[in-house]
Length: 220
Image (cartoon, rainbow, N blue to C red; front, side, top):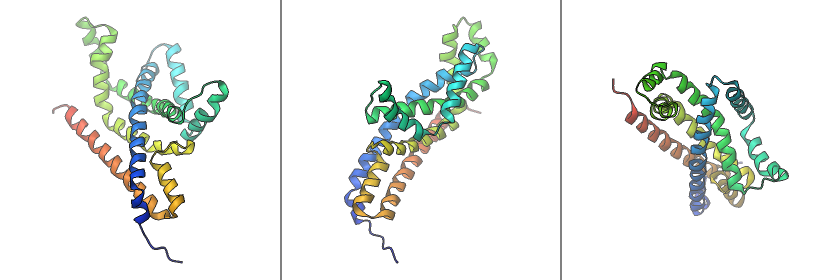
């Protein structure tokens, strides 16, 4: 049995794939900054001397990182309504991705915080800065510069994780590709085009992150 490639049916629905890609990017653009905020707060908890902060932060990271994201997506959408929390498909997925990304980014940021020399905090105290001013003006900027490569890789991985929104019928790229596949029976062509869109987008994101790294690099 031979299979003859024919992309015509896929090209006719290419606008749907682009719409799905736009939604995938939108999901990532909303969820990842929220995840960064969660991760940053959790990272400070992880390096805190207070057990009351360190233990809950560690428990959150352990539980979320050891639970498959698909399970979290399904729990958020199907189980939370049973507890009285009703969210739409998109809102449910964005919340899940933010919580999931926060656990991974917490470890990224924790490594960056540990890498900041203690002398930076002492210098801030010496010139009269408060603890909050030291964190926002000195520690966080230095930490972000240290973790940019890892942060970029994590963000690209999280963008790819938006494909799991198809499990709850969010019409992102993978969902639209699956729908075209079912309607046209052009299996290979559909997934080749969808894969190319993912690769192109991830490559663009990687290039942007490298540009940011070069911009913020410390002159040597």
